Image (cartoon, rainbow, N blue to C red):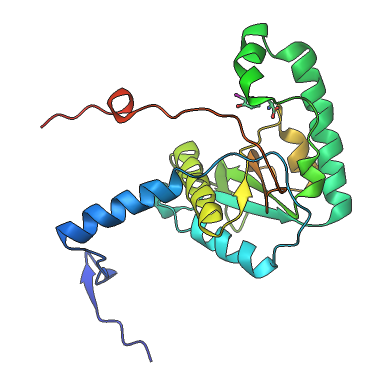
Amino acid sequence: MNTKSHILVNGHKHVVYQSNALSQKELIKQSAAFYNFLNQRRSIREYADTAVPKKVIEALLKTASSAPSGAHKQPWTFCAVSNPALKTKIKEAAEAEEKESYKSRMSDRWKKDLEPLGTNMHKPFLEVAPWLIIVFKKVHEVGESGEKMNNYYVNESVGIACGMLITAIHNAGLVTLTHTPSPMNFLAKLLNRPSNERAFLLLPIGYPKSPTYVPDIERKPLDEIAVFYE
Ligand code: IYR
C-alpha cells in the first residue's frame, strides 16, 4: 500500500519534501565537518588491485543519478567496467591518444602547467583499478519510433552528477581520478554506445596503492574563490 500522501499541483502529483533542517548550532558543526572531510579528497593515480563489490558501485551510481538535471531528464549513462580484457583495450586505446596528445596536441605551456602533477602518457590505473566508470552524456533522447527528443543543460547536468559521484566515492573511503583522454570517442566504440551518447569523463574507482604520494598542492583560500554581497 502506498501511504505517501500527495496533492495535485496543476494536475501533477506532488509529495511532501522530507526536510533535513538542523538547528543553527548543528548546521555550523555539520557544514564545517563535511568541509574537513571533503577537503581530504585527492585525485589518485596509483591504485591497489583490491576488489570492490559490485553492490558498492551500484550504490555510488544511484547516488550520482540523484543529481539535479535539466527538466529532470537525467541525460547520462554510467558504464561500469570490471572486465579485465575490456580494461586492457581501454588502456591501450587511451594511451595511444595520450601519446599523440603529449607528443604534439598539447602546448608546451599546457605541459608545463601539468608538471607539478607528474602526469604522462602512461595510464596503468586503467588496468589496475578494479572498476572504470565511463560517463556518457546523452545529447538527446531517442523516442519509441527513433525520433529525437530534447535534453537540456546536458553538460551542466552531467557535470553535477559527476561531482556527486566523486563525493560519494570519497565518502565510501575509495579514490578516483577525473581522467579525460582526448579525444574520447574511442570509448563509445569500445563500449558499443548508441549514437546519442558522447563520452564525458572516465573515473577509475578503487583503493589507493599503499603508500601513495600526492602532489603537495594548496587549495585557494575562501577570499580568492568567493565574494559576499551582504
Ligand atoms: N589528459 C591528459 C592530460 C591532462 C590534462 C589535464 I588539464 C590534467 O589536469 C591532467 C592531465 C592526461 O590524462 O594525462
